[in-house]
View 1 (spheres, rainbow, N blue to C red):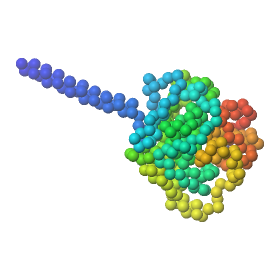
View 2 (cartoon, rainbow, N blue to C red):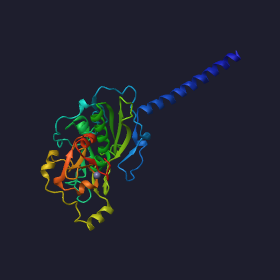
View 3 (tube, rainbow, N blue to C red):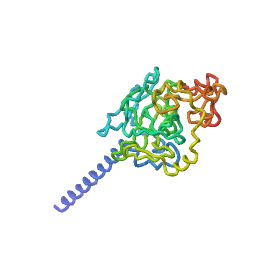
View 4 (tube, rainbow, N blue to C red):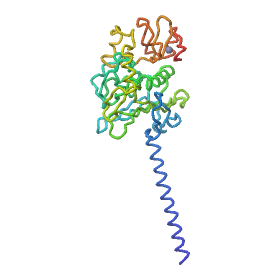
Length: 322
Ligand SMILES: [Zn+2]
């Protein structure tokens, strides 16, 4: 009798142990599926983006495919954009020019101009940022794919990654798994930033593989993420007052070049991959300081890939190393 009871007790303990283990395991599994960037994101420290999870993207085996598709999550109950996921191939890339997207009003859209602080013309703080860049899937006014993002996040944060993926696909004809996840704190209407994951499928990530977070910040501006409202940071206020004449000069009078973006806040047409100098035959990333110094008549906003531009006889700038 006694041994039998002991056996029962032993079995119970084993059972409890298995139960506990399975709870732990399921928590672990759940966590590894629900990759949520927010608990790993370091505070902004002067760089437009930061690597997450040692730069390893979180696509699961059953998500990865060589069939092109694009899917955009439904807006949440606050009207906020959710995750966009795609397998991008050449067949999804745009063949037509971009249409106007100014009808879309993403959450947190409290637009303001900051001459001398935001480096664009007109100097609007916010852009309607494509979650999946226009040059990748050619989506126009899709409200599930447009998010309120600072000029800085759009151009310094997201664009270099979008270009890397677009260049790879155009050059190789292969596929890239691509996921963009906006990260909102609580019920905030403006996101803290976006996570971008990419993975080239046919070569198992040898061509493209990254997992990054781009910060939705604008140096010099203080933003309230609850609703997107914004103002000059106190220290910027002084600097701008002292230098109120210094508004990036020499860039006016090129409305015809820029009209292709409609009234979007940008001096660089969306879809631009590189800026060419027709005179020096050098090409640059759009944010290169040399672009600001360039004469407008020498500028060309290209949507071609790096290798196509080189084939056209252009050399990469030594300053920005595009
Ligand atoms: Zn350059």
